[in-house]
Image: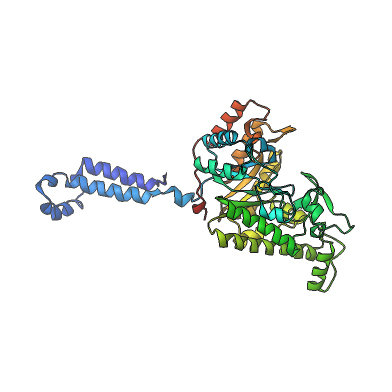
Length: 430
C-alpha cells in the first residue's frame, strides 16, 4: 500500500490530537455531542468524543491512501530467455526443476523458452513435419517434450511461461526448411539470398509470400494450442533486412499494386514503407488468430530499439503498439556503453509503450566466449528500474553459471536487484 500524505493532513492530525486531549476548546464539536449523546447507550456515552475523533481519523486516512494497483497496475517484468545454449538444462527434468526454483528464489517472474530456432521446432511439431522438417529433433533425456516439462514446472513455481519464437523469418541456408522450400526464400537485388547475422550466415523466408505466412502462422497456433503457455513472443527476426524483397514473387506483387517495379535503391522510402506495412498486416492477422483461440494470451514482441528496427529490418513495432496488437514489449539493448544504453532506454517510444502495456529492456548477461561483468549488469538494471521498466536477461546459463565472478557472488547481486517478489498473472496484463 502506497501512502500520499500532504502537509495539510499533518495539521489535521495535530488538531485531532489536541481535540482528544482538550475537547472543551472546540465549541463546534459540543453541539454534535449534545444532540446525539442522549440516544447512545449509557455504556457508550463516556466514549462518544473518542468515537467521533476515530471517525475523523478513518476518513482522513482513507482519503490519504493510494493503493499500489492505482499507481503501478502492472508488476515489474523480471524475465530470462532460455536459448539453445541452455539445451543441456532444458533436456533434463531435474535441472529444469533446479533452474525454475532458483529463478523463483531470486524473485524472477517470467521465463521465455525458445520454441523456434535455426529452422527447427523445439517441440514435437506436426506443422514442421508436414514441411518435411524432422518432427522432433530436440528431445529430453527420456524422450520427453521439453517445452511441456518446463511449462509445468515453471507454473508450479508461480512463473509465467512465454514461448519465444526466436528465428522468425530467418533460417540457416543448410536447414531442411531452406533446402526443401527454396521458393519460400527472398533475395537481394544482386540475386544473393543470404546475410550475416548474430547467428551466422542466414537466409530469409519471404514474409509477403502466402505459403510462408501460412507456415509461420500454423507453427504459432500449434504452440498456442498445444501448451498451457501464458503467451507467445516474437523477436527482432520477425522482420526482413531492408536489402531483401527482390525475389520474383515480391517484385510481381509490388508492381501489381503500385504500377511500378521496386526501386533499385532498397532504402527508397516508399519501397520500405510498402514492405513494412505488409509485415504489419501479417502481424495484425496473426494477433487476431492467436486471440481467437486464447483471448488472454500475452502477445509479446522483443525487437531492437525502434529507429534501428524500422530502418534496418522494416519492423514497424511502434505502429503495432498503436494498433493495440502488442500486450508486452521487451526492447533488446545489448550495448555495454552506459551512455548509449541510457539513450536507447530513454527514447520516447519506450515511455509511450510503458503507458499502456508491460514494457521492459533486454539486457545481455553474457555469451559463452564473452562474459559480462556483474557490475555492468547491475548498472543497467538500475537505469532500467529508475525509468519504471522491467528487465529480461539473455540468457539463463550466463546469469550466474558462466560469469567472470563466482556463482554465489552473481546470485547475491541479483538478490540485491530484486529483493522482493513481483508476481505476474497472465490474466492481469491489461
